[in-house]
Structures are given as structure tokens and as C-alpha cells.
Length: 188
Image (cartoon, rainbow, N blue to C red; front, side, top):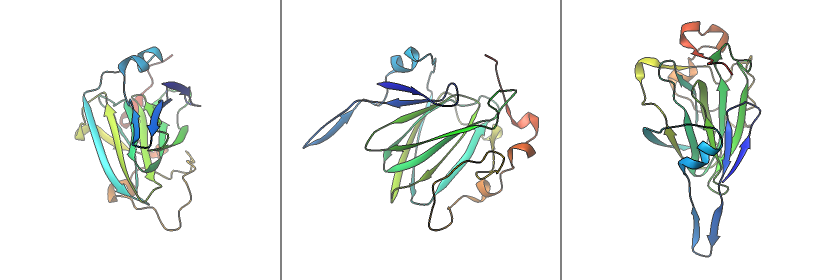
């Protein structure tokens, strides 16, 4: 497993070795030791999977209480995946990083607790899988507007409008989010 640092400290790209031949491929998608050797102590308690069609955009989501660290991947298809630092007091507050995840490279993205997360589907359809370090808690569910100009995410171009849930269309901008609805930067 190759670990690649991103522009946001703590957000990592994991690039596994893929063994392929005429029959298909084999890839090991998770080994706790890989993250530990990269300095990440993560204990996963919940796995999630979604299926979405091309043009769907989900996010930007996070939890204020018991924030979730997420190890995400495209099990099928291709997505553009984004992490945004929404930790109050962070020197990287409001900054984002994005990476294409697909079922060819099998790259994954580690998103530490305290970051908002979102993705858009680039292929005809995509199955998106993520391991989470905390259980989903609807009471602490929060989010930021996907196209907040102050964050300036460079989402891929699309011939038509992105398809979002009503909830995601109504999320506040980062500067409109009350301080108590942000996560807290734990310090260096």
C-alpha cells in the first residue's frame, strides 16, 4: 500500500497494489497496520455503501458530536471525492482537497474526524463504500453548502445541473454555520 500525503495534513490517499490478469483482479482494500504505519490510529465501527447515478452530488456532511473519520473508496465506477477542514481553530480551516477515486486504481481517501465530506459521481453509476470510526448520529448531523464560494471547490464540469438532495441544497455556507455546529481543532 502506497500512502500519499495531500495538501491538507492528515488527509491521505491510499494506493493499493492491484493484481490483475485475464480472470479479473484482486486487491486488498484494508489492513489496520497500513493506517497505523501512516500515523493514523483508527478503530472502525460502521461500514456504509451507497449507489448513485452520474450527476449525483452528495455532501458536504460531517458530525459535530463524535465526528467520524472515514476511509472511502469507489467499489464500482468513478467519483470525485472531497474533504473540507471545518475544524474551528484549524490553520487549514475552510480549505479543501479533492481526488478521483475509481474501480481501476482502487485508490482510497482517509478523511480524519472533523472534516466535511462529499463526492460527485463521474461514471454512469457508482457504488461508494466507507468505513467510519463513529456511529452515524442524526442529532449531530451537519453540513456545509456544496458550492460555497468561500471554499471554492473545483467540482468537475457537468453538462447538466448536479442532482442533490433537498437537504444538501439548503445547507448553510461555512461562514453562516454557528460555531457550535463546527468541529473543534485538537491542536498540533
